[in-house]
Image 1 (tube, rainbow, N blue to C red):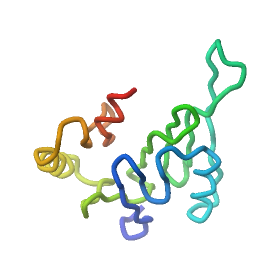
Image 2 (image 1 turned 180 degrees about the vertical axis):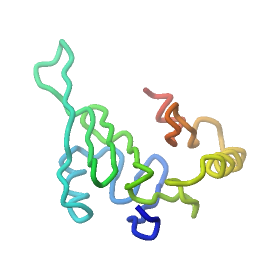
Image 3 (image 1 turned 120 degrees about the vertical axis):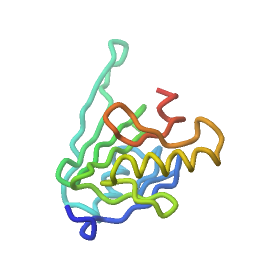
Length: 137
């Protein structure tokens, strides 16, 4: 999707991205996105051997370009599809659909001014990730 046709979201690290606040339930996420997309959230459920009820582990809005990760049925992570998801920015820097080296240089410069384990980093699939959140998994 061309950049000028994308939704514009802002990342507030550890708090929110666009209309989504970390810690929301799957139902709260669906409600928050109901004004953004008519697509329903699709869930992946899981259950451990000790549990009798399955839990939502992941959610997706495939056409809108979002993957959602839940921990104990609370929003813990958001992955934005670079081809069709919203444009997310932090401190005025576009984080989606950028040349990786440009985003990487921005992250390095930003990280030099901050404490360790509180910054964005790349995961294996070149997805931007919060080091603190990734360390907690």
